[in-house]
Amino acid sequence: MGATLEQVEELQHHGLAVNGVQYSVIWYCCSDWTFLAMVYGLNSSTAKFFCIWCYCTKANIADFSIQDWPIQRTLEDCHKQCSNKTTEKRKGCVNEPLLSIPFDHVIVDTLHLFLRIMGLLFRQIIELVLNNGKKEVLETELERINVPFKFYEVQSEQGTTETKWTRLDGKDLHNILENLELKPIFNGVPATSRNEELQECKKAVEGI
View 1: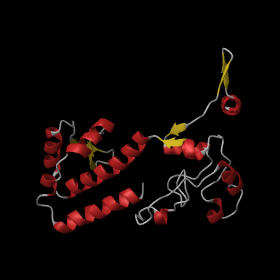
View 2: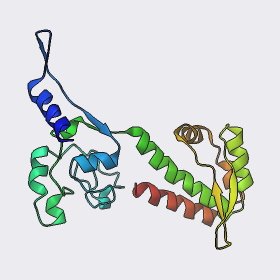
View 3: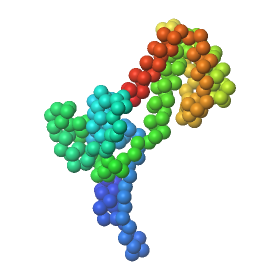
View 4: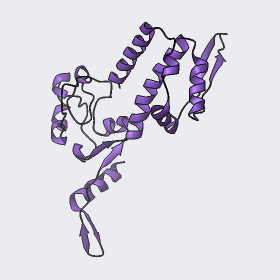
C-alpha cells in the first residue's frame, strides 16, 4: 500500500497535469468507521475517546445539552498525541495517521451507521416480541409492509432449541423505520416491560 499512499501524497501536494493544464487535487476519505479509525491511528468506536473528529468521550455521548461538537482533531496533533502515555493525553490516538487527508475531509459511510443503529433498535423489538409471545404479531406487521421476515427454530448439537429470525438488509430496515406500526406490538404488553425495552433502546443507542 506504500506506493498508493505515495501517489496520494504526490497528487495532493503537486496536483495533476493534463494536456498542459495543471489541476489541483483535493482528496476526501469516505469509509466505514473501523477503516477510518485504522488509517488515522485512532482507537476503536468503543474506546473512551471514540470519535473520528472530536474529543467527545463516552460519558458525553448522550449529553444533548451540548449544542455543537466542532472538528477538533488535526493531523499534527495526532502525530504528537499518539506518543503520550495516558489515555487523557492521547485523546484516542494510538498510532500516527497513514493518510494526510485532513479531518474536515473525512466522511463516514452513512449506510454503515444506519445499519448499525437500526440493527440495534430492531433487536430491542425482537427481544420484546420474544419475551411477550408476540412473534406472530410482528411477522404479520412486517408482512403488511412487504418485509420478508420469519422466526424459526434451530436445534444445536447439544439438543437445545434457539429462536432465529430472517436477516434483513438496509432496504428492509429503512422500510421498517418508515412504516412499521408499533401499536399492535405493544398492545397487551405490560407497561413495566415496555419501559424496560425503551431503556434498553436508549442504552443501545448510547453504546453505538
